[in-house]
Image 1: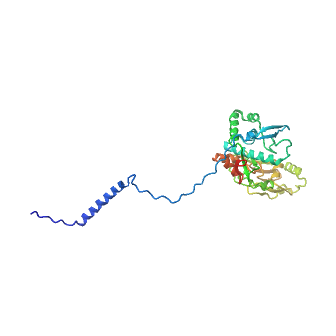
Image 2: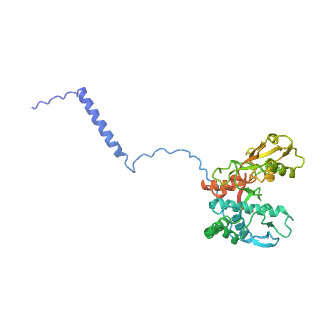
Image 3: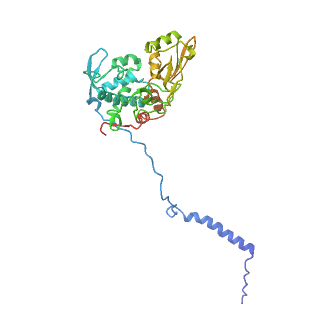
Length: 346
């Protein structure tokens, strides 16, 4: 009879080795249990963050401009009937450098279209027998294709096509406020901010309020210095305000300047007469009403920033925004507060 040997219970070191082998096997086999098709699904979130979509870009209405006719008063007094499409081409060519980005030119086109239709409705009998004129001090500047080409030289065809694109790609689109075309005024360049219409013209217009404008030292002639002899200065001012008194020393001719939030002078006392900054700009031919001034026995000096009345869309600001990647609709809705860009009646 074979005597069976009685097994001994495993000692503590043997137990530790056994447990270690089991753990190694588990670590090796567990990934195999989670192969594709058998892998446990990770818990999914019960909610997602909202997606904020950008406003849809307004679409042109092909043929709308071509279907509108304007009676255009020329500088020689004659009246010519043109389509709105042709008129807008001539306005954009005259009002904004064709070298500007296309989105800036498109913003200019929509502003010009809106301004034209607003003025046509508002002017009444301002131009008997005509809707608008070619005088930039009254309506908008205008160039024929031949006049524009003569100033563009070898770039004439390229620039002509570029403006054609700006007009056709915004065909029929307007800046609307409460469903009506706006008085879409514009100017060349601002000194950091545009101005409220009420500060410049005394009329509160809800869509013509002060906003930041990104142009600066890169703008040609953004800063200018204008000087006059004391005799020239007093002669010009007295022609407009004969009651002014310049008997004091020149360093006392100017009183305190008041400015709006954009820095445009809203009021200043000169020779004892209180006048607006806009009036000073007109009398002395300054590029804008954003200025500082000083007088001495030798000269009267104005330090001027920006160009234009400062209300509405800044053209060089539009260029800067376009260069930052903004489209024409974003540019317009930035400068004209609370407006929408759409076709009439949309």
